[in-house]
Length: 487
Image (cartoon, rainbow, N blue to C red; front, side, top):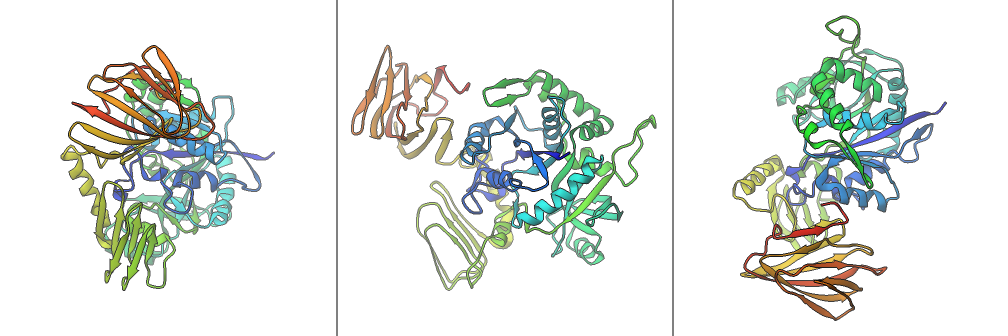
């Protein structure tokens, strides 16, 4: 019988150290940092075509904020799956618990392959080989993690110490998990040889995880069960009960379970049960959690001077520098070990050794009440996207693109009027009680306080320019009467 593996992609977190590309409402896992795929798409694609196993459709657990972008990214790669929505973040242990409940809803008990959505793995074949080894152990009841073979005394990762051998393929029992060490301790770990970086990748049967949670964190299990029971299917999304999930304690997979398991298992207080065996499998596959810009520089291809240039970039007498442009020309002259990132609304210049401190800039933006930590100038919506190309006192200009079949909500504004000019495609406009079509080079006016809706009835993208004018132009000045996307 072929083993069934359920890929589980955990897509939480905001990746603040990769600002200004990664934002709170458009985090790093949605970005194409390595190649054409986003990190989330690359995570799903990494397991496709794996021989010797049967793969279920991917199961993605994510914040509600990202649901439409994630669904669209899965659709573009022809990988339909289940998207489970968390109404608020509660760390990875509750997320995996909800995923296990989703995987077992039809009586199945697959082996879960748990993968963060924002990691990079260069060698797919090596990864798939390790997964096949882990699947066999997980099918027999073990909880498997993957230890990254270290090549430097890294202080930014947690470590796993391995114990005695467990089966084949280099698998060993987990002796202990340790937190991020200082440099001297990390050097000792590297020299000792029995320590590996903690990858955050796991495999176990769904029932094994739920049983382990019942022994280690019954409070989390109970809250997740209540949230699952109160959930509902909303189109292509599965929503858990918000009130019940908000009562769930926050904890990570490591703290909740992994740090409590040893080779022999830890007996429950009653002595009736024991936790499953914890096993670590070595993995050497070009892994990185891409936690900061310096880490991204390390995994990207470089020129002869160690430079990485993406977008409109010119390098002159520069070395070991990453320059990434989303639009404007970046010219680097006589610089070493810099990170330069240009976006439409922000520019980052940082020394490569200080990229962990980018989070401090994000914190300052939050404290100042600014928006650059949360959203890009270009904002994605379920119907398409808009880009705020200019703004001033009492006016704002947006470029709007609506996908074929896309429909904005039926809405009204209290403080602004809108002028719409069609650049290309066809627009269906509802204004008050009337509806009409607009074609290229045609325009219309939506007075303040008028109920209106914009749709794309065509087969190509609708591109238009919107000019807003009024006393207040914030996105919260929207009264929605109908919305096909349930916002």
